[in-house]
Length: 92
Image (cartoon, rainbow, N blue to C red; front, side):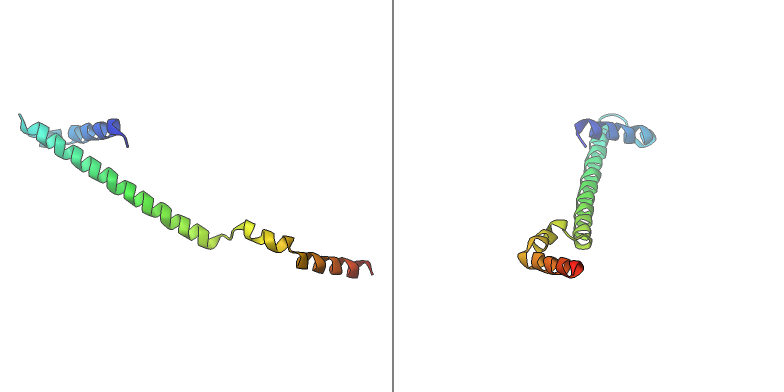
């Protein structure tokens, strides 16, 4: 959320709660309070999204094996020899 979004959200809240807005000089302080709460909500949401992303990354990495981890086994000479022996059995 950038500054324009914070300003827009602040004035949206002010419009929706215009009957609660104080008159005179206190209106500016009230708007600052609204903006502070909008920023705090945005920060909390960002922290929650970050934690959720980390949890999802951990679950995915635990559930999915790396396909590259099988490559050394597939390329090993021992496996190739076993494959050659299997082919010889098929031909014979």
